[in-house]
Image: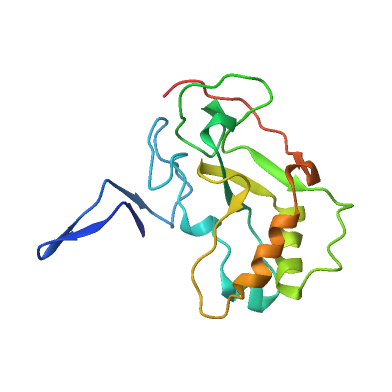
Length: 174
């Protein structure tokens, strides 16, 4: 089971959270349409984080979660996302659950081995829009071995270096 909390704080001997989501990792069942989670798209956060143990193994074999500002998110969501934010319906915007893939011809050879592993996952599995936040921000799990100065070089990649993966049917309301 995966338990994820949002905006958690200690109150006396206990804790309070603005949101809690529970995922049974032994099933492929999805949360009901319209349900949010600790992220706005209703997706589990942990499975889409960049994690250092995968970098140590040399491969990340899943899509990576990313965020953009709310003004760039379409009012709708695509599978496997379950939730939307309201307001924007311009065609060039992406809904929650939307996927981008780093273009195959993007040269990663000048980057560190760590960043090459991350970029390879972006070329193979892509990025999945999971929440409102900074533009093109990918999220990783904390680890003492991360080199934050090196990871900042990931910012050299821009939206122009990506292509949209087929979105599928957009759900327009919760």
